[in-house]
Amino acid sequence: MQNRRHFLKQASLLLAGGIAAPHLLSSCGGSPAAAAAAGSDKYIGLQLYSLRDMVKESGIQAVLETVAKMGYKNLETAGYDDGKIYGLAPTEFKNIVNDLGMKCTSAHLGQSFDKEKEAEIMSWWDKAIAAHNELGVKYIIQPWMPVNDQTTLDDLKLYCDYFNSVGIQTATASIAFGYHNHNFEFKTIEDQLIYDFLLDNVSKNHVFFELDVYWCQVGGGDAVKYLQERADQFKAVHIKDEKEIGASGMLDFQPIFEQMKANNIKDWYVEVEQYTNNDPVASVQESYDYLANADYVY
Image 1 (cartoon, rainbow, N blue to C red):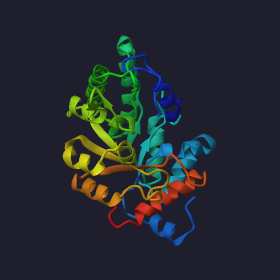
Image 2: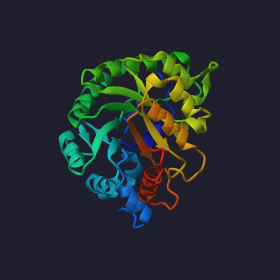
Image 3: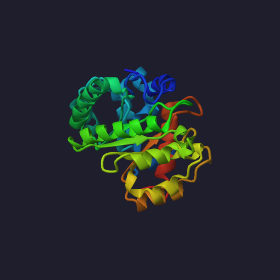
């Protein structure tokens, strides 16, 4: 099983229509604020990639117990491999999550595409979809695609068609298929913005988008504008900052949440990838506290 960062580094070397890459991964504080936050009834979600190092060091059970104590209620995974979720049978993982008072609603996983290996790739998806149907998620989301300086619009269109095919397969299990952005999608190819091209060329009936608001802003996009103008294409959101949520001051989260609420987006997930004091647990707790104490968060 590879972590997502390793995939990103490898996949950046591939053409969008080229060789298939390996599959993606895909203690509460003692302060008064932390104590108040832990009792919040807000439906705050977490992308478990935020605690990837703790998963390796302490195991997924300890991670799930930790985030449940913090107050997180909604989870998105990044640990699928060969029919298992973080090394566990899907039902076993689901039972642990539910017993801790949380739900697992989304999963990050995927493969890059190679036309010559299409049958093999789609067979991989069949097994992955079956596992996540057993897990009971609402969404399967591919969190990256290979794009480099040689990528063309034809390559992007190939991926749009590929995503449509995967979305048709996930729909048979009543799971919606989505794509999660980074910042490179806000660059242009042949004078067309990559992200807009993807939005315009997938089937809206089979592919949705999970908007990462931090990467959108870093890339030069306007998250609120996308949510307003493309409301029917966004089902989920990543609430992300440079490090802990709210720490950088770079993002104005209030209008983002107000638009999310107007769009009736129910599922959104905190993702923390960098940590001020090299303490992922503290950073994930700080992010929870910030959101739990913000009046505009639902």
